Length: 222
Image 1 (tube, rainbow, N blue to C red):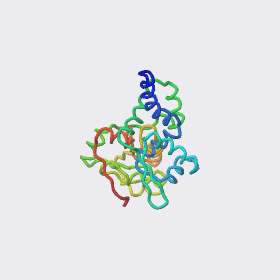
Image 2: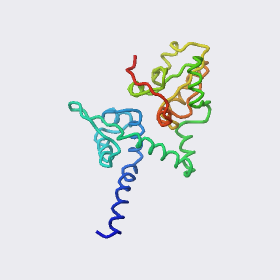
Image 3: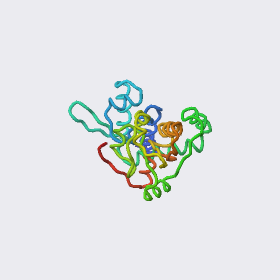
Image 4: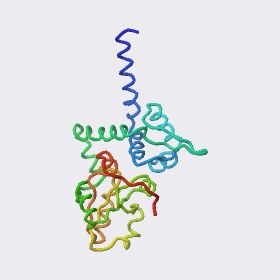
């Protein structure tokens, strides 16, 4: 093998990762897997795909070794192959934010107008320690169980309106979800405002929280 061929072989290995991540739906599946391990069926349901298509995307990710699997009976569960994969996904977002002006319009179209106040991680930690705020996780329950902010309560968005009485009045609420491109916390804060509650959202989400080496709790949903 020539030196040129050997160099080409090295870059071909790098390209395997790029090829695996070249699909918007595969990136969405990575976003979901960054929240915790999921079955193929659960991923398909959340990503609005059929199981066959979801399996094909997951196989492409597995062949590039960015996801791993385990089998329980007839079910196959997927997870990110390592923390470095989550960090790569975050870096893709950062590069897109810095270099793709079209992302801004797409973001607004998805998340809606900038009509909610946000709060940073350090303020959340300080106020949780002070005990003067309620932090709610508005992701689905299985994502909360896989890992959540210390002291957070599980209030999935589709349950929030029916469970407002569980949130004491006169106390600020901070809502969070998967990350800065997750609409759940935006909708949660809008809903709380509509019911006269004081609420803000965490500026990013659980993935960024973990990437900053901040503590995360894992427990069953009560």
